[in-house]
Length: 484
Ligand SMILES: C[S@@+](CC[C@H](N)C(=O)[O-])C[C@H]1O[C@@H](n2cnc3c(N)ncnc32)[C@H](O)[C@@H]1O
Image (cartoon, rainbow, N blue to C red; front, side, top):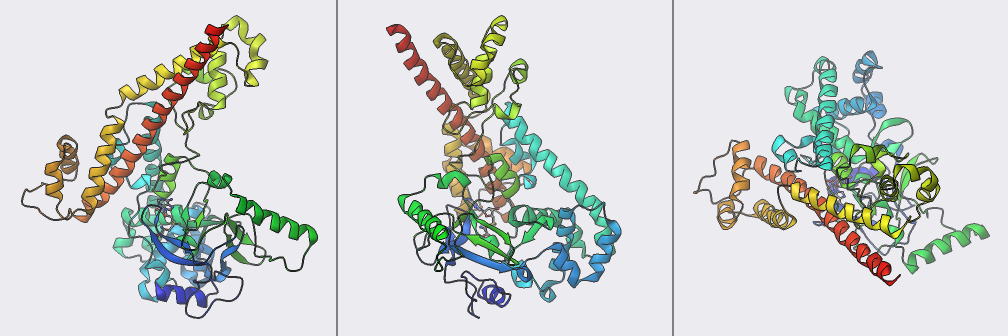
């Protein structure tokens, strides 16, 4: 890592507005650190940071883009040119990335490439067992499977299309394998930053070490954050010369100054992890693009099976009919339910009231709340396991990943029925004499299985919250009704 930090400093990557020291590009604003519960390797504040302060800048020369690789390697450039416009920008970047990997130590990017993860957990890497662990029966779960399969089909056909070109470039057999393509795809999917001149984005050494926090997490800005913003706004208004132009209120981007700049989006104390908001994602989308999910995701959307006529009613798109992470139905779902439960001959007259989000009558509201309770309960009952079961399974999966004696853990567990198909799927015979760690291949599968269980568990938790929320509203409204 030290060599990488030195190399990046030589390229002009710096965590301060001034030039980096020759020995490391970090140390003045951020430092590499481990955050086991929030993304693993990440960047920590090297000192107290103000909201909007510059935390990293990387000049264009330090960005790995397909344009850059092709400028340095005319053979790839002419090969790609002869396949355009059939190749997408992502396929092109993947080919460039794999070609650099194939060069080994002679690649200009060797130090960067050698610290990339050796495997990923994005949805496209899930095998059938892991995908099924998301659980099949409801609309949302079917949707998850569908997303996973669609993603994988797309990636496979991209690979098939690009294979003749890669063969023509003399790629080593290992790099021609689908496994390598998936690895490169996941690298691009989970690590690129947006740039205006290439849809595939760029890989930014050091800049891609920032872990993620959901964007509206910082809505809860503190008084200190607000002070920082006031300070910046006042300075701007007064056009004060001491205004530090490195202060910004966004996460960052590629700027006119010909470098990528990243900013602290809130105040950080020394040692705290500095996080970026890569975008607004549900947990399924995080899993699809980045291979992780959040225990508390403010942007999560939970879908329940809805009758077709309810989905079609009004002008609300199907994807706006969901349950929020706090268990409340979305505005559109609430409105759609109010319209749906209104007798047909009254719908037109009441539509103005319904579209504005107003409650129609206590009776109507009670009907839809009770309907929601019933629907959530039915959905939960259809799922093969309960939250408690999933929670316990998660604890065991976590233990197994860290245990040096898997057989002891297994013997103590009540999950034999769950593990038999897992070992069968992997063609692995659990020998009672194995008092050691599981093979790496199985440990990785356990990790993905764990993500699937975490996802379905969050789904069930939100349904449960919805039941509690609706029941408490039913209680309140019934009291009101009785008082009238
Ligand atoms: C841009 S990289 C961040 C650096 C990465 N941790 C590393 O060691 O290279 C993005 C990846 O980090 C992990 N990650 C980022 N934020 C996370 C979070 N809040 N929780 C869990 N994993 C996270 C995911 O694996 C994601 O695909």
